[in-house]
Length: 152
Image (cartoon, rainbow, N blue to C red; front, side, top):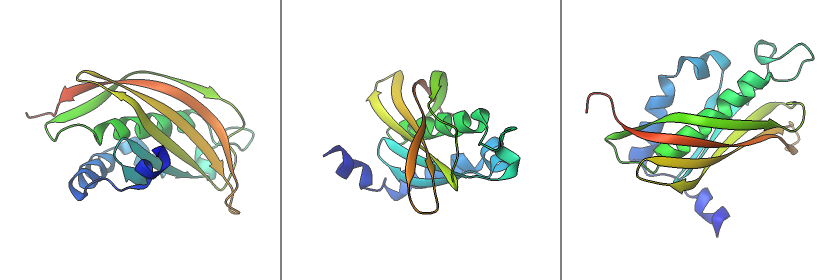
């Protein structure tokens, strides 16, 4: 049942709100990341592997890996909030499980518990090869706080 729920699309209004907010993130733009799937409580962010985001061994840098994981969780939480709410990360922990290699990375943020004030998300980052082979390269957990949208 969980897989089916995560394959549905968020409403057009929620998708636009997430896309508009994502478009304001200078870091995601700088890294070359883009939104993938947006569903209620789950967001995918894709980061193409390119020299500008690698570390000295040619793998995608842990900072870039962590940044897309953090954003994926934040936007997953935002999909469940009303239009007057926004979100900020309170804390997150990432475990780097394998070198971040592949044609691109895909970060998936999934809401585990959405509350009035705090929301907890699971973070996963996969290295994806051109062949479609996927390998989990990082996982973690994140706590977010719901805030009033600026100007509200």
